[in-house]
Image 1 (cartoon, one colour):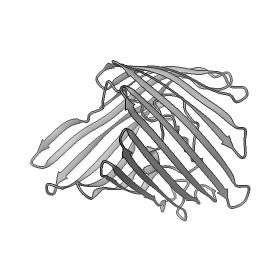
Image 2: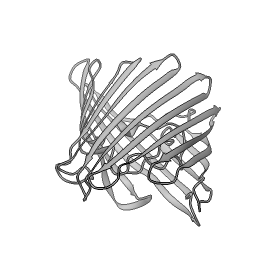
Image 3: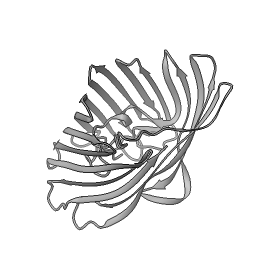
Length: 316
């Protein structure tokens, strides 16, 4: 799985995504969520072409039933119309899960869903970021369980995945788990993630682990500062162990409806060339929950040219 690190907080401070309430009566609620993003992007690399991409084309329904004042039970169903940056002829199924939501005890979800490491990442880039951390493991799956507890000053999460259908790189004889622990102190937010995967599917036979440490500071009006450290180890049953260390920093500043953001990361790899990546962008909240943006990014590897792109995204 490829996943950017400096790549997750893409909504503008001037807008905030809100689900559309379709029904709310007698303890039953139905909300609709979705996002669409279309962009023109020239990738970082040698002789790359400017191409149109459809990065998101999703919608979902979140239905919940109130058992009592503290407990809700509900189902979530998501559909996706994008595949490999193209709009597909048929929608595919995204996340599908049943959830148990308790005001005191937290949230438990069971089904096809993203687990804790899907939340890892700092910054506000749209197109370019650190290339990847887990090489083969997915931060989500069809046979997943996720638990989350957020007490304000402290939060915790646990994710588990099995692959008895042998549909992922985990495999029916493999396993995966990840955990998240965080604390909010004054204007700081500190988060630690750990993930471990035993990969036995699709011809793989390897163990992978990841440690992620992140810190965020929001003590200056309209300014966010973020720092992340990531360590990945891959231990194949036959072959040489590899590991990589990544240090990333990012910042964004909001002026009215416009947010400016940038980030840089250094990647130290045991089995390949070390390199540095960076990005700069600007986004404008043209309408509620709708942002137009432009971004550039590059790295210092050989035979790579500057990447750039423009796009628009909307969420609800």
